[in-house]
Image (cartoon, rainbow, N blue to C red; front, side):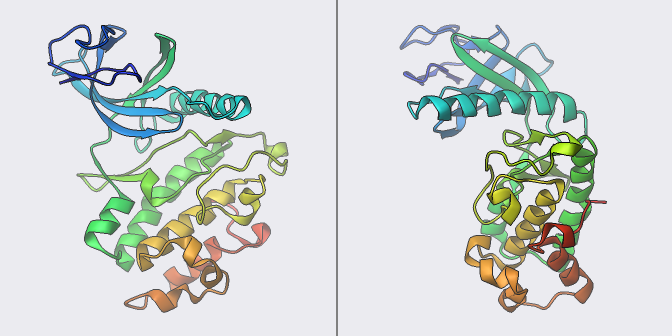
Length: 280
């Protein structure tokens, strides 16, 4: 099927149709990207599963469409900046094998579009929902795969700022991919302590990031919170006091090795200077 990209229509058309049968909109972006179905929708846009028909075998890709609904001028402006930032970050960082590659970024028909590599897999939150609590071995695998990605980002002065289970996808081959760079921020080393806009997801955000002072090891805190979530199947926001006093172990079905527990505790230290300073 061909999904109409007009937000006021969204009609599903037969596969070989060039124009929407309901509203007449052109169905292919840049005469090559054809949306097949909606993957997700929010206040600032939609995400589509799509095909790049310029590629052999019609390569699967993802289209992100930015169309903010009435939410205030400043909010829309900030969202537009984040959308553009995501394209810039993916363009610079997407050559890393565990970060989606940016395929295109353009404006067409009055809307901004970002086309990126499709990651065939499930995010950790969905895996947790279907398979239950993660084992110690699985948590070690998350750390061993995601920490090098964070090191790659931080060496380039990029803070992801939204590490959480939904933004880590496990492909069929077991490789973990870090996605959603809309909140990522490029910062100069001298500006790490400058107060900025608070961005992130409740429960996974470090105390300093919550007041707009994200630092590279804010991502380490968020990854620690993600691991505790996977171990306990409880949202970090419901474990907040338990994380602070290291009592999250009380929610484990099986005790974990002290070394791993200590690593997670050090990732979740509230005081920035006492927390791990680098992903390395």
